[in-house]
Image 1 (cartoon, one colour):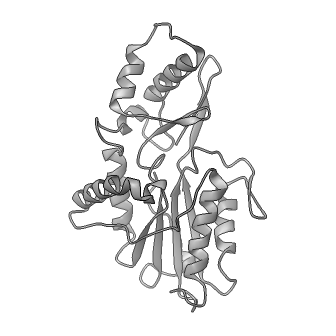
Image 2 (cartoon, one colour):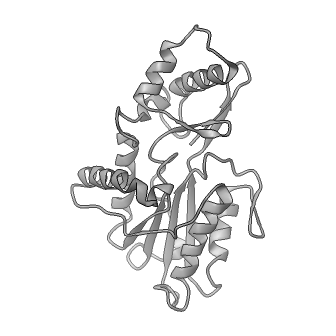
Image 3 (cartoon, one colour):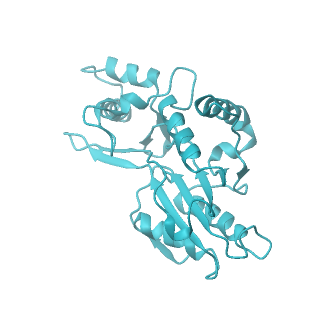
Length: 255
């Protein structure tokens, strides 16, 4: 996760408001893509299990691939990190679904955004069944900040099955902010910061509406196009996605 970027095109820090969209899985934790199954959570337990299986034969190819992926993630250096670091530094502790290192980075971003900001939960964690996890996350971010933190809003309820569904939901929220009844209908400067892995999906040309999303710039342009041309908006996407191949050719995708 990167710090807040320079978005001066949307006005100065003093007069612009920042809206931060926060995904959780693949942003505040590390998930490993597992074919069509739910992602493998890279936590202390799964890491220790995988490393303990080194050199052992697994029951089937799927299990073997899962172990190999987890072992590879354990030693891989994340993008933009110091040499010698690895995803093992970002694991979730036992019983937790959030990395303390990454929740602290979120707190730093929230603090850097200044007082004129709102933080929007755009993750599947906005569903009612995850309310307890969200409260625990808010308490952890509060601890890092040294002051009370809670999400200011959520994107609309929706059944999201792919990257385009998520981007569309965020776009709907941007459109509502700049609509005639929205807070930014009058052209006040607005900065958008999106922290998102899009369900561990690369930006490889998938479609969202009439847009082909093949880069962070394309995703940002989609969001800007959801606002009217009179709006004063800048957007920054931090796409927390990484992929590589193991020496045996196994593709590893993480968010």
